[in-house]
Structures are given as C-alpha cells and as structure tokens.
Image (cartoon, rainbow, N blue to C red; front, side, top):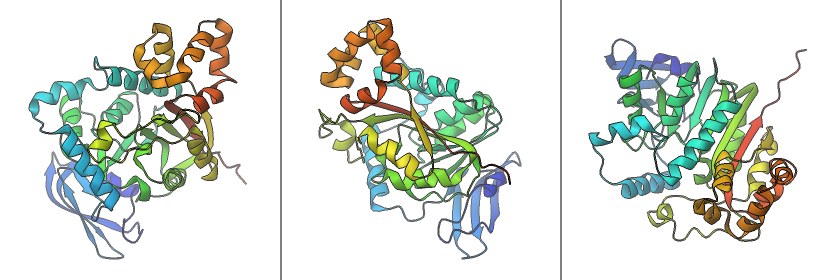
Length: 333
C-alpha cells in the first residue's frame, strides 16, 4: 500500500477521512508492506498485510460465505500458476475467451488514459493491471479475497514483472469505504452479481464517481424473462458462493435510481459466438439462440441487434450484461 491511497479511502467504521499510517515494513521506501492505518476520529486500527489495506475487519455473513466458497472451489495453489496469472485474461478456455473479448471491448470503448480507476471485485487484479497498461494514472483494486493466486495478493506478481503497481484494499462492495467523487472510472467485471443488493452497490458507485465519470459494468450474467436460468447446478453455488442471475431490467433500473445514466451494448463475445456458430454461445443464449442466430445472418439484422432489438435480446436471452453508466457533469455556476 502506498500512502497515496489515503486520499481515496474513508474509515469503514465511522466514515472519517482523518486517517494516518503506521509503517512497520516498507518495500523500496514506496510500498508499505506491513503496518496499520489509524482513524484519528474513532481511533480504530486497520491492518496492512502483504501491502493490502484491511478494511474488512468484520466480514458480513454473506462475505464470509463468499470467501469460504472461493477457497473451497479453487483449492490448492502454487507458484506454478505465475505464468497463468501473467497471461490473464488471454487463456485458451471458453470462459476466459469470453472474458477477454468483453474486457477488450470495454477498454477500447472508454479512454482510460490519465484516469483514476476503481476496480470493484477485482479478485486477482489482472483487470487492474490491464487498465494500468492501457494508460490509467491510478488504480485501486478492492475485493474480499486476498489470498495469492485467488485474490489481491496476486497483484504482487504484476508489479514484480512489469513495474506497474496496484493499490489494494480488502473491502465490501456493498459498503464502499471510499471518498465521494474520487474516481473517473469504476470497473466492475463479473462481480456485481455476487451482491445480494445491487442497488446499494450502484449507489456507492455513483457516490465515488466524479462528475462526468462512468461505471463500466461488464460480464454480469443476465437471466431471461421467459426462460429463467437455473443456478442450482452452478459450481459456484455448489461451493456456497453467492451467485445471482438478475434480470437486465434490475441493472438498468439500479443505475438511474442511483443518479447514473446507463446505455447497453452487444457483448463482443456474443458477436464472436454468433459469427462462429459457437455451441457455447448457443448454450448461453438458451432457447432464444435459434431466432437470434437467424437475425444475425443478415446485415440489417446485425444492425438491429446492435440497436433497437438489443433490449429485446437482453429481455429474452440468458446472456452477459455490457453496460456503461455515466454520471452527468454538473454545469458550472
């Protein structure tokens, strides 16, 4: 953790910005590897371990279940995973091919150069690293998982191999301990659906976004209004991870209710899958696939699916959400 992070965070107990640092161990006089952050208002201490600020002193029952579930599902880890971590998200695996396509799409759409970026539910923080590579000025990664190769400690690998440093804080996205209007972009990559109340998360995102900023919501599973997607056999659910498949309307309503103005796009992974006749895409879209594929074969159909038919696709297909929600810039007085 660098001391710069104190300009972005608030005490998770009392909400004060009066925070100080006690450094016990530094790395190259820049990063605080061990120590604590002290709130000058409520006098509580929050640990810094392995360079990660511990702003999750008492995880909620939901967060505890999530942490235990990920550890159980991913199992043992070792340094043999370093090469894999450095390749993320560009792996030859159906899930990662989808993730990479949609992540690249959002990076191409939104200029990150010189921006202050918050990465919520960052996990291994590969997305934070890639955003820094795209020119972001500062990135803060938050997640409830910290274990190396599973959570935020993985970011040490990116710093060691590229010199790009990511500030990290263990924090609950349902109660973001962050200062208002402190970020230009907020990235949520396949993480928002883990929350039992996305309205609260969206309100927190709107609060921390600066005027003119944008929330980038990518890879969130959306369930069909006609053919609900059953999660009972999902590996994450089996391991106790908090999986939800919300309606697209739920996301689209949560944004304006929080003061953000959303727009949706057709995910690149869906376009690729329709071009290739991918069985993975067919399975993902469910019973709506045949009709969508027929429309996609024609040039006018492609234009329609990217435009006025897109809300229909999000309503009837089990798919992934791709949404940019902007916070309007206030007119100077």
